[in-house]
Image (tube, rainbow, N blue to C red; front, side, top):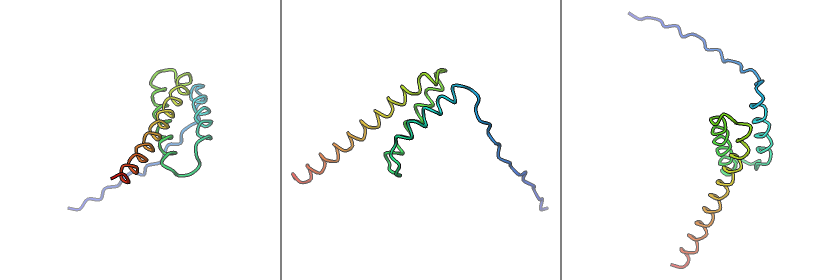
Amino acid sequence: MNRIIKIPRIVPVQWKESTRPEEVVVRQIRSEIEGGLPRDRSSRRHHLHLALNEAEALAWQSGYPALLFPLLAEEKIAAVQHWEERQQNLWEEGIEMAFAA
């Protein structure tokens, strides 16, 4: 026998604005940092967003997000910049080696 199954309609939950001071501070700091990121849709912007996500997650796990997020964000952004420089150097060395052969 064919049975008709009714699927309940899922209504999205509307999130309330945070009233916790730590969340407000972290959101403000993140907005300031993101304001300085490149505006294009480059992989660099994507990598920097991932670094900020990771820094924020680690800050929240610490229990002191407003204190640690700026430091962790700075560290993660520096790591992305170092990685990009390393990738550029490897690319340039690869081109030089290709022409040397």
